[in-house]
Image 1 (cartoon, rainbow, N blue to C red):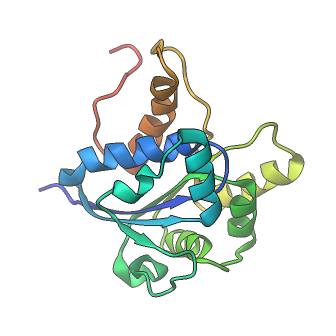
Image 2 (cartoon, rainbow, N blue to C red; image 1 turned 180 degrees about the vertical axis):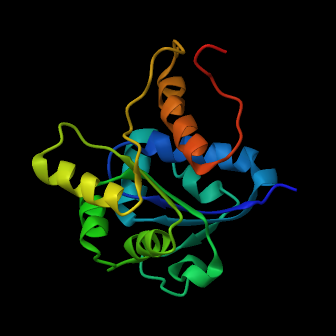
Image 3 (tube, rainbow, N blue to C red; image 1 turned 180 degrees about the horizontal axis):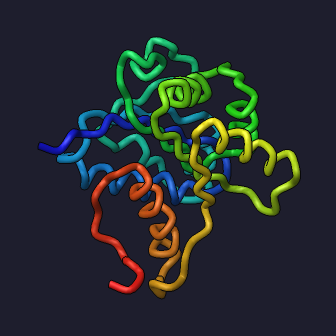
Length: 188
């Protein structure tokens, strides 16, 4: 019997709303593998989504949304046993707060919980170029057990649209989370 995943998705205000949208779309398709999905979306993330995607379709997903300061959300505690957190896209400010152990909102508190419980924290960082502070923060999170999954599409599958290119990153993050999806596999 497959254990179903309990997943936290945080959507920050970094550019790359397409990654969050595709991630949520795929989680809808994978509901047989998922016991719970909790979403934290910042106000800046809503603005970026509206700007980049031209809609407010984030309101249409069948998941539980929590406000940025709702510390009563189940995944604010390790006892709720959420086993994976994906931050997509992950701003450098969010990365820095996580690396510094600053749990000043639900996103950073949930990341802190995931790390302290030795569960999967996947940060889809979205910035270019990186400065030394970004790199050191990525190192700190990696040493603490987090996974840095840059929002850098792959092209060996010969994607034919922006969505297909972005999906290569989302598919990789879902692979890292342990979900099973049909996607392009090198050499197969």
